[in-house]
Amino acid sequence: MDKLRFAVRKFEPFERAMEKCWAAYQEVYPSDVEMEFVPLDLEELTAAFFEKKGLNNGDWDIIHINTDWVARAYETEGLSALDSMIVQNPPEDLKGAWPESLQVLQRFDEQIFGLPFHDGPECLVFRRDLFEDSQEQTRFQVRYGKPLAIPKTWADFLTVAAFFTRPEDNLYGTVFAGYPDGHNAVFDFCIQLWSRGGDLQQGEIPVKLDQPLAVEALDFYRGLFKESRGLHPESVNYESVQAGAAFARGEVAMMVNWFGFASWAQIDTASAVKGKVDVAAIPSAEGGMSPSLNVYWLYAIPEGSCHKQLAYDFIRFAVGRQQDKLLTVEGGVGCRYSTWYDSEINQMIPFYNKLAELHDTARTLPRLANWPQIAHIIDDTVIAAIKTDESSLSLLTKAQEKINAWL
Image (cartoon, rainbow, N blue to C red; front, side, top):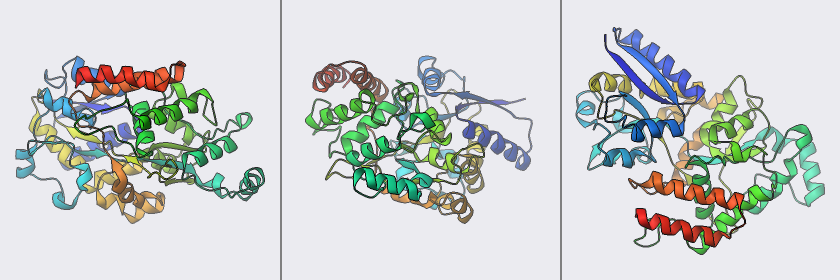
């Protein structure tokens, strides 16, 4: 009997959706094939793929892989190209299924090494019930002399975060995912840089940190943690899923996080803010442009798998219209246009059709094979900024020296 092993991104909505997707697949295509789902968090996934050589040694047949890591996986010949199988048996509505922004990062040398699984650019997620409450609006007007509104600048963001912070009610203005996993703090730093008109790439240098706007970005981020202006006290320990869970528990008024956590909080039966969530553009510096970040998850087949055709057959089924919608209903974020504009989905999640708009301003991180190592250097720098008094310029200069060695 054949058995497929699937490395799943650990997140309850993903796990539920994959189990239901497999059950549906077995109904349509009955077989003796077994599926073993293995939920792993971010650090466990990278260790399984790279340190343990799981992409090449046959440990896995299907994986969820983040676009941050896909260049490294390609460079180490860890992923199987899907082109011939796609030509023979293409996914449903292949040509019009996904936006180009969800098909670029997995292409190398005109070959496809993954299909979109879970999307959702970063955005401002907020509790509509708090912002629309007439008493809250009156209190804010009296205290600050201006109307309560969704913040469009970082200065306004800090003001609103401070206003909604009420520890005695276990309510805080915002939450950031400060856990050092090489991801969340890096994303937040990049968003701060972009929202000030900066960029990681400077000329021919793909990653340049020792620049004035990067200093401003790091100063602002460290200020969030050191001065605790409306920040949830567990922010330094939370990664993005835990930050999203704190929001869903009703402990946070607003956060910059992935779109998926907004949809999850909006529809999950256990969410304390069910039906009270909305999204907006991320704030910017005065005169800056609102940024977003497009990092997405893929279904991919490791090169070491002995069951590539079986694996593709399931993936092809999983990326179809019905299963993409199922993922969304379970609390993930489907990637198809058909899901984004589905009337039932938008009745459940009225802001769902904003996904296309968010993609218009979404940026991507450098597609470098050694990006995970560079990201950890940036992550270490951000954490050092939070925990020490060393100047941001000094920290960024040291980080740049380390990055230059990788570049």
